[in-house]
Length: 352
Image (cartoon, rainbow, N blue to C red; front, side):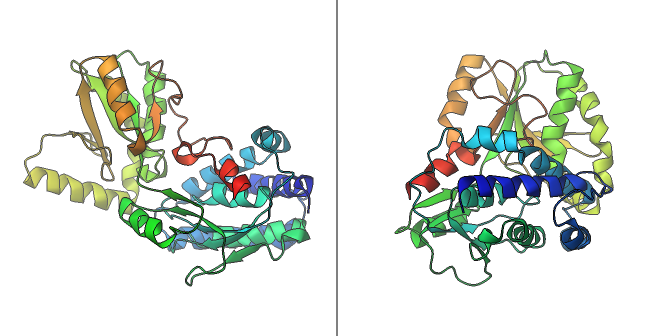
């Protein structure tokens, strides 16, 4: 199977996913193998939603919309244009996936297969319904993928390299267990925003998407923001109100109530608006329904601080603060060439 065949298969997958990017799916009879897979995938979407309360219909649809946009011939070719696939030595690459947001390990899955390797997937129990079905679709539209995609719930065996995502604690285990294998080991990271107080209402409303999308569970979600000493929170609270209905979700509401009770009993100072608490804290990782903030004296000191802490940060949302910053509202819309932890996955895969 050559590179062009692999690209074509993922383009067909993108067309397939395009039918499910809204809360109500829209069937397209021109999609290849649709008669075999359309109804089945609708069932898997329902199972995923029932299995994990964080995987709402809206969140799953948002994920599928992003992937349908990403998996086009133009985007895939732009992504892989800088790499040389001619001398790839096919290997088996194991992927240990997280389960915090829908299809969170899908980029690693695509990267391994587009690079010409076989993949051995160990999924999170929180996100186990969607990917195996999509793998079957790939095998249907490109039979040469058969035998190159395997899933396991057992101990990983017979693999040549590994990509593993987990917490700081599990990362230490991964680093020890896979010390003799080429590996990418991902730890906890969070995203931050840098505000000046001059943001427009539109920018702050867009920032609320970075905070609340997927209930804030992703590493690309903003969990903390940095503000000048004289910052007025009124404009921020007014802008984020568009997400007020998030409190209608029982799991989110339970976390909100629990964390609020903890803060009140601990006599922590905080501000809250009925669906979000903001608390001054030096940590980067805030609990669900909470956003941490920290004040800064000048931009130069803050740039130095965030540079020092770069291994803890996935994205910086800002306007004119630093190179590589993310535009307000775009953290959960990554391109194929936006790599987690700034580690080029395809470059790693082509060198193993």
